Length: 292
Image 1 (cartoon, rainbow, N blue to C red):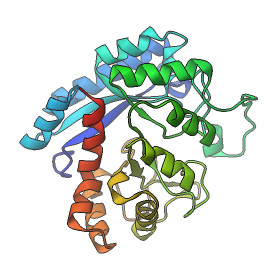
Image 2 (image 1 turned 135 degrees about the horizontal axis):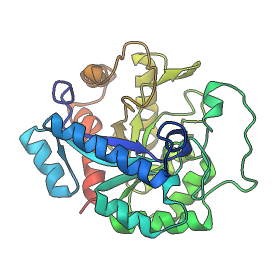
Image 3 (image 1 turned 30 degrees about the vertical axis):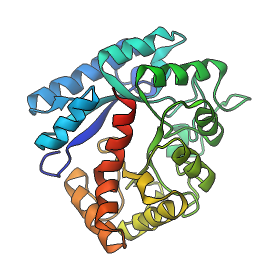
Image 4 (image 1 turned 180 degrees about the vertical axis):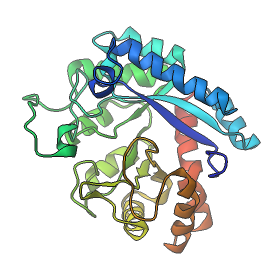
């Protein structure tokens, strides 16, 4: 499917927070993540897709037009309090991590606990939001190991704390502009600038559910234009969160419609070079900067 959609490289995430590791797999969180990563590898192998763990392998995927997958983890809860597990993930092939996902954890705090996706269910939150002292060490360890940090799902405090200690680019792989729509999963203009200040990218996210997200392609292009106006089109990419959400915006059914976003970017006034950057080159630049 990736090849038919014109996608050369995609990040495939295991989920490391309790939403999956406790409920779905019912096993030790660390083992649950490892099993998910193994499933991704088996699926990629069955589809003839390679696993990219280095800059050279990324470049080869683009040059050969042979899709490759970058292994990621969404939710660093499975680390527990063991910093050495960061290096073990890197040795395992993980190259991108979302530190906080749908629950607060030892690293930091999420912008939207999973219960708030389904309704206004009370959730006990930490008294002091943001990146914890342990979280500061985790972020440094990720970046020094060559693992890209993705601030998607982080609340504003955690995002800015991550940027304050960042020694390499960070990304917000699937989000939008809060100025366009008041949604906790979207970034305000200060958040957009913070990510861009590290040299990172912000991913356009065609999500729509429970009245949140973007409505349709025109709405998505409004987010694209706003983000480009605030930080420049060189800091835009696509983050479809494919297979990660149950619903999408009108006019988008999944990765098979990926090319329609590129067409819409042209119609929205982006130049050919800018579109090439948004649909791949910008993300490749950041991955190549972090991955050795």
